[in-house]
Length: 135
Image (cartoon, rainbow, N blue to C red; front, side, top):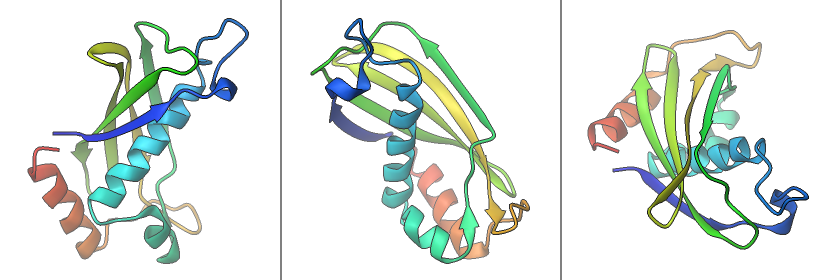
């Protein structure tokens, strides 16, 4: 099971050829990841209020087919790995059943000084519970 977010491709998301600009898929990933964390019980705003962040240290995109202006696309986001102080998310961007882009991102859990830290127990438990659900 994945977190599923549907969005309509805006004109601003596209390039001169009318296709989604390749870098915008990372923004789509972020939107999917934000909704996944919310669904797991960890809205990103709550994480930040506690003095923590999830910066991106690795991003991967494999492009299979383009999305175009006004397409209704689906961003499927999965929590694929949890370590002592990081998470990895996997993504599939689709138009109907057609897979357009796949990829993943890795995020260390850091404090305000950007120093990696272990997850507090309550956050770890929420992430593990979400992972166990077969997201």
